[in-house]
Image 1 (cartoon, one colour):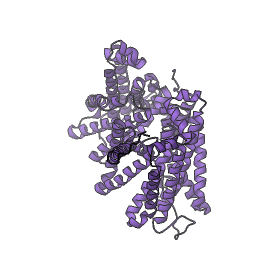
Image 2 (tube, one colour):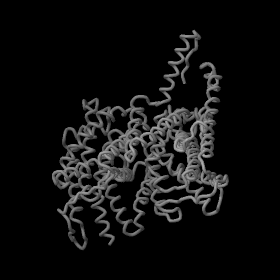
Image 3 (cartoon, one colour):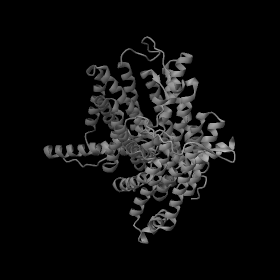
Image 4 (cartoon, chains in turn blue, orange):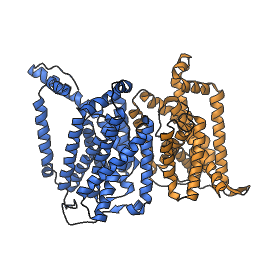
Length: 344
Length: 284
């Protein structure tokens, strides 16, 4: 309700909807414009990072719990659907949900144990959990050990989620990105969003008002785990090879948090802007620097994070609203329409 | 056999301990977790490696040089970056130090390439037999150096003016400020001292293990575990935690499956946090 009011105050809600519809239409047509396999791959990975960053944003941005072991859930999703496909010939479409469910169970177990810990302690225990899992998976024969698992190739089929070209993958991950973004948008405007913001503003006051912070955090953690695991399954099907050193790395877990931080933490748009900025840039740098690209990329992540933290804590979202304000002022001067600017 | 592994574990643990003490100093005084701690360890190892390559120095000889360099790097890190995030939300504090880790690690990666490098020194090779236990000469010297460094730290904190200032700031920054202590300066010195301790560990480790750009990360994580075991902010706790990790890794390495080392340490870490969130020796 509050939000509806604000939209009215901001004026022209139809402009926003029109732009949104246009954006979705463009995204749907994107494979028509982008024909190169390599560029399609970049788009798919960017969307994948959008979803992963949105998931982290739920626990890290909204619930304010710095989870640094998200690759655990990613790996659970990837390994579960893969193993189910290989051992029981189960379709990844179903395996995805099994992986997601398993990740939720793990996240609830871990969450019940460590979500009560204060900030740093929670962050460090998620790191520790991730490292435990990485070592176990690297030494566990059943899941392929350190060498990992390659998925058997099938002729293009819907059942095995395997196709010869990248377009179907694009639509799958696009659907996920849109759904997750809508979910986060709705959560942002729901009681979840208000409560988590209240908790972040004043923990004690929120608790005195009867907000159960622990339950909210647990919910955010489980949702985060579920979404991340789904993307994990998708990744396994798309790349067709998983190993502890590709899906269980601590640096990747950290990167999943850097993306929303650079974009604007705790906002709906932040993770999208962050991913759209960061991932294509890493690919560009990879093309430029070749073998040294990994180093250049990580230095860039670090520099971007420090820059955002020092200069503009809301990252790109803040810059965007800055541009919006400037644009609006320009419009006002031209059209003479008076709009009271209540910024969000 | 058990005694043997415990003895070797204590020797290794002394190195973990000295790393952990540096970490806990910073945590104690400003509640900032320095996730770049391991990167500074790696820097120290590279300094020793370079000095060995250029002048043939034994890392034990380069140690004072590494200590001085890292002391100033520590002060510089505080003055350029850390002091800006003192009042920032925890999320940003954590990611600033992670960003530092990325930048330091991968700058070294670009310069030195991911080659595994080693310092070849024969001085102090061999083992010595003490009461039926075989102890590695180099490890004994390392442990002695760590003990010495720890004694220095103790004397520094207990008796010098700056040391007293650091302790006062750790206890209560506002009261320290009211007493005319320049707490900004104390924070800077703490960073300097913390990194100087890590430099000592780096010099020792560069004789024992391979030097490469991400070598420090594992040690950084181990240091967190040591700090958690000992109680956050407690110097003696971190010492004890480091020794415990040394013993646990060696004993599980000998009696259980070798790869159990790492999971067992992290499992102990999580369990400790759940059962005693302030650490085994924590008191707050």
